[in-house]
Every structure is written in structure tokens, then in C-alpha cells.
Image: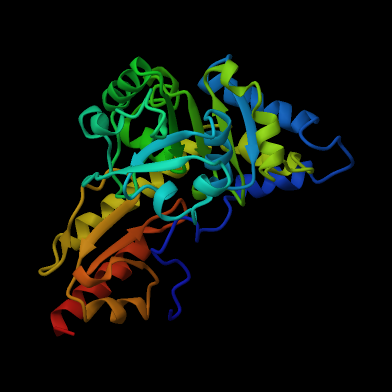
Length: 347
């Protein structure tokens, strides 16, 4: 990958924000009770409630798949189905865990821009009440989506109203919820609970944490049995303080917003630069911290020798470039210059 330290492969590739590392160091002293019965976990939960509402129930887990699977399993019956976008992480990148571990069938819906609509899910709602079919029980959306697009609060509210009218719950895979909220210019609550979201998988790893996600219930009744689901799903950390301390740091002095704002700004900068290069096409709106582009096929491996990134649809020359809280403008300029030079050579 040459001498470049930062690539554009994933916001998972980024390191840990210094304020989060400092928080980990501060709690790495002495003994406290395990499994979340400690003051650091209490502090993190209190910060979540200040931002998302006093009524929320918050549970910390190890990773995003664990957050999604345990959340869905706890609000579904074993004969239920989860409606999601065809390209959703649930459907494509979780190795069948929702179906095997949570025991729910996924009903995937074509979503050319990554977003579900009440109209697009209408045909998937007909199974309720028919014993020969799985019962649609949850609508799960990804915010921001796998294509880097962002649901507006009105779009989420319309989906939630549609789901709730038919007895379904609404789950948000919020691996990049901070990026979405910053893109929309709204508070986290306005992008989730205020729109009718029932359960949120709140992402931390992609926004400066070392590891850890949170499952947030806006309806406390739905959280009644979740602690059992978390334990059974192997997501209960014994040394919980190390997950909680990271979230406490993320929710202090708007660190979540600062990190997401920077990542989003770097994506806009990258998109602006590559749009000026003949032969490069940005194929989706750049609304969070992802840039999707189409390039001539021979150019892609040449660029990957210097900067790592993933092909999205290799046959079409479509690629994904992700920016992070630690992406620098100089990284963007160097990458854009390489693209420009490579394209000019006709490689």
C-alpha cells in the first residue's frame, strides 16, 4: 500500500480517538464490579439519557452484528420476519447471523438508493395473520445507508407510522448514526426516537471508539427481556467499564459530532476533487462519509497499490471510498492527485 498510512477502505480501519484512549486510561485503575454494575457504566447510560431521552434503556455490547442480532431477537418472535433493504448489512454482511442466531427470516427489499419507503415495503406486509407465512414483525433500516445516503426525519417517520399501524416495530442499524445526524443538521434524538424508532443499534466503532456498540430502546417495555438476550447472545462484557468509558467520552463535549462532522467534510472534499477528473463518475449522493464512484476497470488496481479501498461492483468498475474522523485533507489531495495522474496516463 506504499507509504500512505491512511486509506479509504473503511472507517473501521481508523484508529482510536485520543479522547477515547484517555478515557480508557482513566478507568484502568483499581477494581470495580463487573457486568456493568459500576459507576463508569452508570455515567455512560446517564449521558445517553441526557441526549436521547430520560426514558431510554441502554445496553452495551461488543460489536455491530451483536447489537443488531440481539436487538432484533429480543423484539421478535421465532416465527417473525424482518424487512430490510436488499443491500443492508443485516442481509449482506452478517453471515446469516440474524437468521441463525436471532431466528428471524429476512425479507429483503430492492432499494436502489439504499432507502426503504412505505410503498416499497407494502408488498411484504401481507403475511401477517397467515399461518403459512412468516409474520413481518420488524422494519429495519440502516442510517446512514450502505450507499452513503441518509434518511430524513420525515422519511423515517413515514416508515415508522406505516410499520406501527400494522403492529410492526422499527429498528435502526445506526453504525453511522452520528454521520447521519450531522448530515441532517439535527440532534441524535431528532433522527431516531422522535421519528418513531423503537430500537437503535448505536454505532461507536466507526466514529472513534476502539470497540463497542450500544443498543438503545426508546420504549422501555421492549427492553424487559433484553438483558437475557444480550447474555445468551454472548454480548455481555464482564469488564463493562471499558466499553462504557468509551461511550462516555464520545458523548462528552460533542465528540461524536466533531468526529462525524470531520469525516463527512472529508467525503465532501474527496467527492468535489474527483468530480473534476474526466472519466470519474460519482454515482450516489454524498450525504455522509462515503463516496461511491465509477472508474475504468484497469485504473482500480493501480490506485490500490498506493491507497487501499474496496471495489463495490467490480464488474462495473464501481468502488467505495470511506473517510474517517482521522482522514486529513492531505490524504484526500494525495489520493485525488493519484487518480488524476493515473487517469491521464490512460492506464
